Image (cartoon, rainbow, N blue to C red; front, side, top):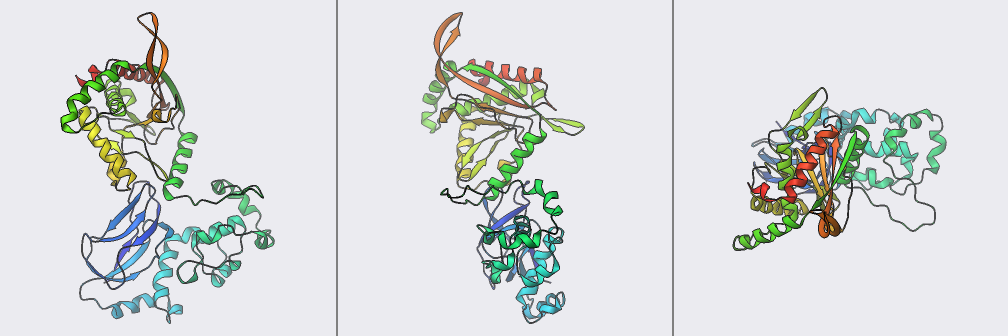
Length: 429
């Protein structure tokens, strides 16, 4: 019996992806562990390997296809000893009208099956006249574009999302006038669509990556659904900088170099264990309290942001944290992280000090309940032992989910973090 290979969920937040590249072709023999394709998820471009064995009978999704839903069939593999001609008949029976073209019945039912709920709103007449993906139909309806005026660049001339870029809605407006109530009801869903550029202004339209779309969705949800409270402290860095220099001298022979960020990760983890009421997650009518500190560290990569996780940072040495974060950040920029390396985390840290940013307020990364925003260390007048001196000072701002963390608990965490950074030997004890 043919084996249907489905679009995998390569990250917990992935709902759809882009089939960036096929690494096999029809007729190839594959075995368990072989890489079938490169798939762009909401986090990175990842390799997809098979656990099945057999011969590739059909690739059902073309390279570069966007919006392939998780669970949709993307290819068919024949098991050992199976005959392609013997398996073609059942496929054709599922769509007798298309019997002359065996490839089409295999492809179209799979796409339609995955998109049935959204495609139901498309008039049957339009489906009979124009070949278009369900996503392209939905966007065309929202934008008032007549699909019949477009030329498809997808498989077999199919109209895909990219074909709607720059399409003019003028020809479709009269036809869309009757069901005027439908677009009004759908207005909130259409909000992510960019407004038209001012006429005459030179510009280009940049297609959003799956990662950027997910960032936009998740951060919008965070600001809309999570009541943020912000607490800021100024922290003297001189003692930490001195200790860092001494430790780096001792680590030279091991090829390890600590950054300030490595030490702040350790300080945050230690503060979370000390003020455990902040090492939590809101879960409706319950509160999840964590017994270790897993710190998600914001790393900027081409096209977006990813947060590799330093697991158990409260128990790891500074050298171990430095080595691990260097490896994670490097592979993050290459798009080679595995899902378990950038998901989870009990709290996050975002450091923009290297860009000279003095202070900022970070958006909480759900379902976490806090994120620490680190500003630049700079020379400032500062009171030391009741005297005004010049010291290296940074501002740190904690963003807390007020559903889970009270202001007093957040303040206790910030006080603990400040004390650990200003007296860094406490992190090593």
